Image 1 (cartoon, rainbow, N blue to C red):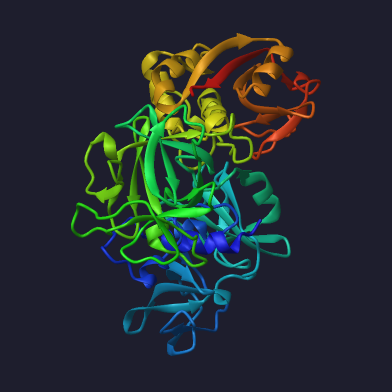
Image 2 (spheres, helix red, strand yellow; image 1 turned 135 degrees about the vertical axis):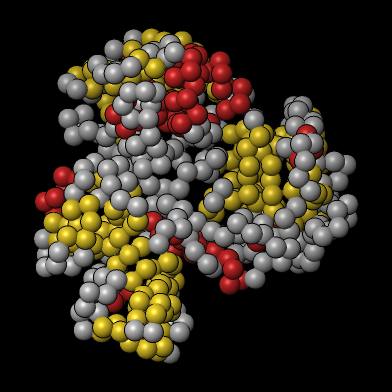
Length: 510
C-alpha cells in the first residue's frame, strides 16, 4: 500500500496553504507532510506534532548540520537523553536536545531512534490507557491517552515501537505485543477529503443551468443539455488540495504566467499580482503549484484557490483569477458524473481520534454512541463523494432531539438530516424498508442506505455480484467486519450478529 509518488506529493503540499506567497520556493513545499495519510511514515509528526524520544543507544548521539547527515555539529551522551523531534525528511529527523551548552538543534539519523526504519507504519486509535517504555528494558515513559492516535513504527521481538500521545505530548516508546493487541483500534486513517477522488461535472453558481467545458478554442459555458457536456477528474494531493484534470484530454487545469504545450482557457487576468493565464496543460511529473487547487466549501459550492498564485478561479466571459469574495462567479458546484462513488469510498469510524473522545450530547462519547451519525457520513460519501463532518451531524442530532441519552440516535434522524443538509451535500431521504429485494434494487439504481441491527447502525454502500458492501463504523469481530468495508451476502445480512431489521434509503440529488 505504499504509494511513493503520492506520498512525495503530499509531503510537498503540506505547507502550501499555511502561508502562500506569490511565488513559492521548492524548499517550502518540501517542509512537512500534510495530515494523516494511509500508508505514509510519521503521520503524527507530519500533522504538526513534536515527538519526544530516547535514542536507541545509551552511548552517544551525533547531531548533524543538514538532513543528509554528513556534516557533524557535535555529539552528546545518549544515556537519559531525550530529544524533541519536530520534522522528518530524507531518513532524518530535525529536533532539539539539551547539552552542556544549552539547547542544541540539528538533524539526527532516523536509525538512531527507530529500530526498523523500513517498517510499514500502521495507524490505530488507543482504546485503553496502556503504559509505554522509553526503552524495552527501561522505566515507564508515559501512559497512552484514551482514544488518541497511535502510530506503530516498528517491531523487535515481542515489543512494538510506537508514537502515541501521553497526556499533553507525543512520544516514541515501546509496548508489549500482547498489550498492543488489546489496546489498538484499527481505523482507516487516510486523510479526509472534502470531495472523494472521481469524475465530476463543474457548474458555476453564477450560471446554474450551464456547465464548464474546455477545448482547444478555450473555456466556455454551455447549456446543461448540451451533448458535449464534459467531465473533470479530481486527483487528491493533500490538505484539501487537488489537481483538476480535463477528462477528455488528460490535461490539467492550471494558472501560470508562462507555460508550454498548453491550451489557453483565458487570456488576461483583471487582477494584478495573479497569473495572467488560466490554462489546460500537461500534468507535470514534478509538483507544480500552478496545477494545484485548494477547495474551500461554501454551502453547496466550493471556492478554488490556486496554490501557485493565490488567486481564485472566476467564471465570466473569459475565465480569470481574482481575489476572494462571495461572488457566484467564484463558486463552483461539483456533481459526480457516475451514479455512485463506487471505488473511492472510505469508512469513517466512531473511534477516529479526530472526534472519538468528543461528547455526543451530555452523555457518552462519539466513540460509544454515534453509530447513526457516522453511518450517515459513510452513506453519503459512498453515494456522491461528499464528506459531511460527523460533528456537524452530531450537533444537529442533539439540537433537534434525535439523540437518545444513554443509547444512541433515533431512526428519524436520517430523514431530518436529509431535510437539513441534503441540498448542501447533494442527497435526499428515500424512505425505509425491511426488504432485502427493495434494498438491492435501490443500491443497483445508484442509492446507498443506513441499516439497523439491534443496538447498532451501519452504512450499506453498494450491491455487486450477489453481495452487499457493508461499511461498519465500529468494526467488530463478532460481526466479522473490518474498518475498510466488507462484501456480505444476503444471508449474512439476515443471520447472527448482522441481522438487519430496517434500511433507511439515501439517494443523490442530480
